[in-house]
Length: 416
Ligand SMILES: O=C(O)CCC(=O)C(=O)O
Image (tube, rainbow, N blue to C red; front, side, top):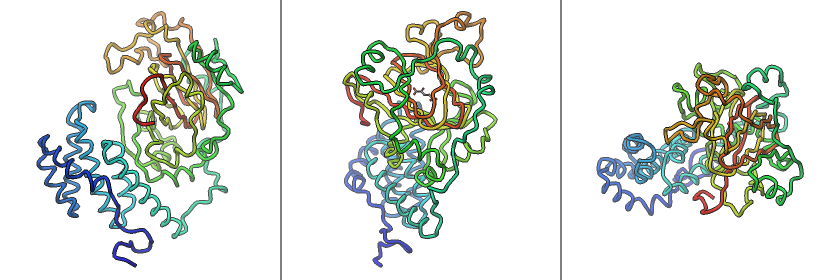
């Protein structure tokens, strides 16, 4: 066994960080130009193997990330945060503390900048592989085929569910449902005419359809990963908050139905598939998303228990919302009704409606109850096309895993 070999395994006990090694001089220089002298001296000690200095540097960068609104944080501090996370992770990995190493690497991926993202991801791959090997060695590997650990069972009580939906739900026009929809039909009948549609049969080949309902599978590929979640009734409520928890804790919260007093936990609008490559392999980008010569803007996960609500809002992009596991109720109002839906005046929330569909204030919004809408229960295996600027309200009716694909014409996004 060489001096770089960890006890009990073949992998070297060092996490390689080629980008950090090349870029660190330049990065530290830029950080000092922005007044981060204390950070620079801690980072230098961290690079020499001082764990406390690495944690102190991470703390300093963290403070900078929380010194004002997110959009005003200087990118260099996000890179500084990633750098410190890599130093801390190297230490944990060297000590065989694999869960701790994964946690800090995920923090770097979620909160850090772009400069060191490759190093963070390859370090995650290496730590995850070692963690998996360790589980195989101690016999704790799960038998996926025989597991009956399902995220969503068969039970579904429609009468009960109907009582939870906004008034007038499923009583007027339903969203049109089509199967074997060609790209040409999609273009002419839906994309060009801004007309929502449910496409019912184009997800059967996704590995996710089978795998994501298996809690053992999800635990194996993502259990020790840290993810950002939202806790509370919805993002417009005062008590709503965000937390960083492990995916296994998140699954436990879904399974136990044990909501915090302020509401359910929702992994919402998170680029989970950039973070966890195994899950990315389970899905495919629908061909419809290339209609109009467009470019994919973002690919987000929406995972949660029954009872999550995304309040009425609109987005600027074309959207295919793919319902992989479970069911959701979705209501759509045409973009032309924007004024009647009273968007918040505040620019940050100007794409959200002040109307709470779960409890409409008829004195304040007397016309809303009469506005035309289309709605549906989006079933497992179906995809819903939501045209740009169309208002949508979404409530999960069972534990649920959905994926949204946003695309639009024009410049490409950085991510894809
Ligand atoms: O599924 C949800 O809760 C919301 C989805 C959504 O708002 C979107 O895809 O834009």
